[in-house]
Image (cartoon, rainbow over all chains, first blue to last red; front, side, top):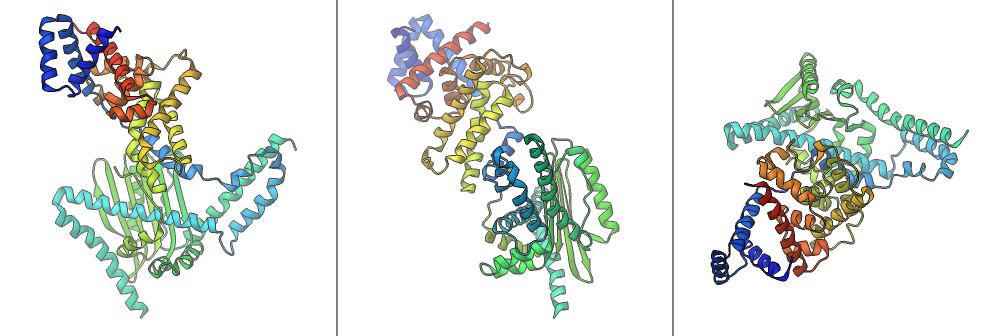
Length: 172
Length: 180
Length: 162
């Protein structure tokens, strides 16, 4: 591309990007009236821009989305798997492995890691319960409106709560 | 024993020993009245992408750990005897999951579980059931099937959903189920 | 930090995927490259200026893709059904028109850095300044190279259109 073409391209792109002043834009268009090649370049540039407008950021596939979310958990160093990495230590791995596993089977007190994992699992379970409530509310809302959705979702909580209150009374 | 045989032995031993606690926790829960058998979808969908089995022992420890930070959390957990979750990836093949859904629903009804909520849309089904005994809650089951996942949650024991919302903040665990 | 990471994933996963898809064309490779970039993001999360996460991530994604291309040496034949520009799955809406499908192929056929420039600026709609940061070019270079890339595409477009 020679210097002349570069200047042309610069101005055409600036025109498309809306960066040319009104005067400069008029000047460019006036030049295009007398220069067929310039006119064609401007038209093609607009056509290309229109074609570009049909393209957009693509949605990442679900398989990828899941992998990306899993990265923090996967990147956490796992003391169990670390045993297998140095091959020369494999011969000695069975003894601590048995001790750890026996502790898991008959825990007197869980380790801090086990407790942390249990808390996380509990949070996941509760998050899915919450999601079911959200889903249920959303489905009902789309059909009958927010007020009714609240009433129905609320009634689920009330139904459960009233049973719990009854059981508390029974305890007393 | 050469190195590759040693590694295979250790891998096998590891797999056996690590699954034993999970099995042990699930076995402990099976006899409880609030327990629900979700069936086995692994033939169709492969291993679940997530399995959680928390028994009473572990829950007690978590509850004790929470008691100093949040008595409310500790109180909620103390009423639970078990938490089970199974999640399968669907890859848009939902027929087997829906079929299991219906079968589990039938089993729940015949075992005295009461429906609380049911949603039936083309792309999503939600079921919530409760098990009561003389006015006391013994368990809750939530099942959700959509085009991406089949989710089965079984809470054994008593659970107050309003307390749950308040208590979730206490866990300080970021859980994002990507509901967009 | 996990919460912050999840916010970054939500905000940038589609853009990173788009860059990888255009450069590598093969969907599976693009998925692997995108995943690698996010692993690097996770591992370096404490060292990156939070204001610069997006350009950092796009740069790392692009560089990872280019590394793969060099290893591949562009001699491997791709499974045509995985090529960017083919109408399949979610891309059907995006490439609804013939021109759109053609344009994707044309962009994929550009040499670097023109291809990345077009994807980052015209498809992902990053600003010129952001693109300059991502590709470690100055603003003038970005504009000049982009003009050349667009000229190439225009010339190709004029050949296929009556």
